[in-house]
Image (tube, rainbow, N blue to C red; front, side):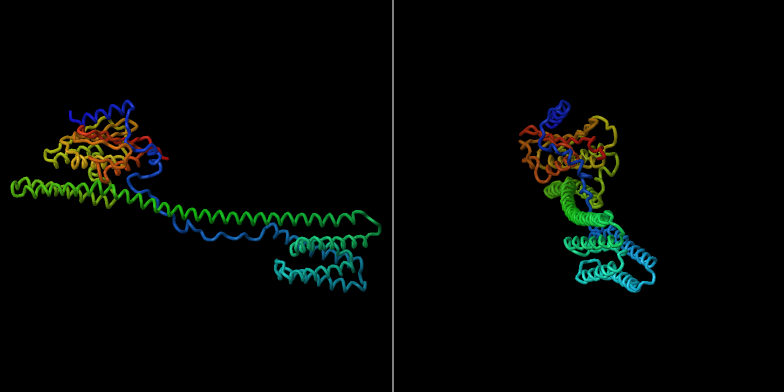
Length: 465
């Protein structure tokens, strides 16, 4: 048994007993497999549409609906109280000399009040002057007819809306005094309720207004915080989309690098060796030279098929032809042996039976690993025999590639090994296995050949999460 087969058997025995020296696939590979999506291809991280990322500026908060309803209520209350007071006066004091003045002042007060919405709701100087005239007309009206005193309640609300807090409280206090005085003028005898009721009404009106103002302030602050959060979210989503685009670009570059190395580069290398051999033997042995050229032509045809499938992002040609990974490995072994023309014999062996067909990405990755490993054996190992062993172990699948070549001393954990494996081969193999959540191990020693083992768990790949 050649050294590669001995290493192969030793690797399988250690795997079944649990003892194995990992040459550096990484313990977090299983987590990578859960997060990479399609491991062989670039992650599908297309950026979100612009309409999703930026729905436009956040709308500014509209007027407080509670304040709007309270304003409508106060307007209705003002005209209702004014109408009730005028009706009461006309019923109790018909034909008096002051009646025309009362009617005229009532109409004037109504017109002045209606001018309020026209002037707007902001505390402008015109608005303050309007309030002063409104209060003055009301005061004259109360002096002439105390029954109009309760029209002060809507004026409480108007003053609180327009004036600064201290001025508004002073106005409310002044209006309350006028209301108390008017009530005492109407009373035939002293009643404590006439003194206590107006301040109580003023206090309640002020408390309600202050509470609603605080609610409005809190709502505006909340709306501002929400706008800030929306802006932060939009900014974060834009940054995430940019990051995903960068990661997708890097992943696609890595995929392209691995695919080119495992297909076109290896095929071109083989063609170069065959054509050089044909050139050396063209005069001495034309038949052998023609065989080399025909073999190189066959490799070129396969490279062309791989390139077409590579461009269209399809499975490797050997897998696309049917039969799955096992048939593709057997075909690979036969092809490598034929191309070597007796210098290298490659055999393929399958152990176990899969419970279910292997995922396409697992088959593709293992086939690419086998192709890369055999290319390294052919170019660097000076081996005469090599073996491919595919082992189905239920919850995982293992591919061993062994040879009886000159071997080397691997550097544990090194991203690039020396000697038999060089260039992009080993990093590409590690990347493929890591994307599947598996491990890649290497056993080698000078003069004892090399065994490369790729183990891929299947339970992780079946997890929908």
